[in-house]
Length: 561
Image (cartoon, rainbow, N blue to C red):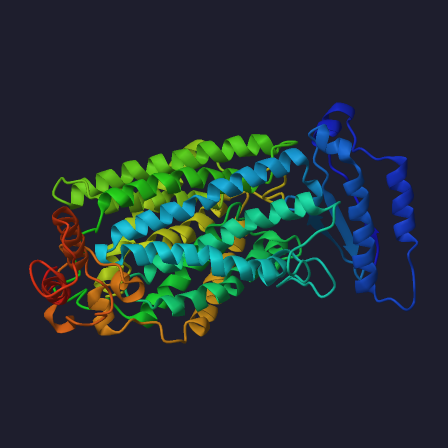
């Protein structure tokens, strides 16, 4: 087996008419070629030689400062004499991370974490009021329990590079830590990827809202890291088999949105619909707080810019150009989706603009453009976003007709639009010559043929199959709230939070009687103020004392809602 390298630097090639080669590189190349040992297999030798070649590339820091891209084209000749070329991209290598890049990555991570607030507000606004606190709590759980497992083993499974790593998962970086030399790039990369991992789990919480036990969901959040981490390794680690296949997912349409959406679909199929959801037909239920849902949309919209723009992994070299491109394509896609959603809502809702349709159309468009945000044109982003909105709004009523209960429309927004987003890369992507994001290929309309579309399709199938299988195995626990708790609402059942003007069905009166009712609390407060004003002790049998208050308190638990 022979290993050869070719450095491609477009700026220097244009200026000098030849590729840039140094004496140091030639010397190192000769050393690599001379590494021969009868005790080592060809596979081991190739890996060792490739590691030395990668070290040479990393040493040329001036290439990054001069906005030039080092790309290795690995030529391998097998025993039959057949030579084939394998491109080795460095798009996600921590070796490229400068302090400027790390600052950008961390800033984007902080913005992405605000999306948890957006998800919480959107989901709580789409659900009934008696479950809104429980929905917000589950978004906290996603970070707390999902974060600890991602630190323990999730990041290592996704990006580990130690012995034992292969095309399906990484090994190393478990219990993430780093020495002084590598801490900047390692920690910045970890925080960014953590924000993605927690987002994938949050998608599931919305689909299973209003009927899931909190302890069971905590366990799922703790283990769902496995569901996310391996697909991330396939599509974002240089050795991942989807990377080797040539699949492209810039910011996570597949690994975040398809994986999360399919996991949510499996969860809602196992849970069954909410009690009485389809008793009066498949029409959508009214939103608990459209205002909260719209505020959540704005926060997600803002966070999505960090989501997509941060996925360029920096601003040095040519990366800042792709960051700016990602920003405009993200905005244009949401515009295209929003306009399409307005038209569809007016045409299908008797000339009324439905808030849920507006929200889902914009979010579906954002999901769709996520896969190709840095490799499509602004006008193409408009088209991708518009089609994403159409697919999302068509899928929502379809699921309801199939009696698949998705309270927030997350399956339609994330899974359905995510599938379209991945396929759209195979149609609209340009051959990226700045950072080699498409591995030298282009989509159908740019003359790239059908290979990239095929690779994208294979990635979609792999993500769906993996997410469905692993989610089913993780959700084989007792998930569902009891009928009494579901009727009362998770806020009362799980958190002892009750509201005024909350009507309790007669069949569940007295359940969770240990929770103080808001009416009884008000009576106690008013009685205490009156007692203080009259300077008479509240303890006793007469007047407006405790005996009367206790009687009203007991009655209030059952009737004064």
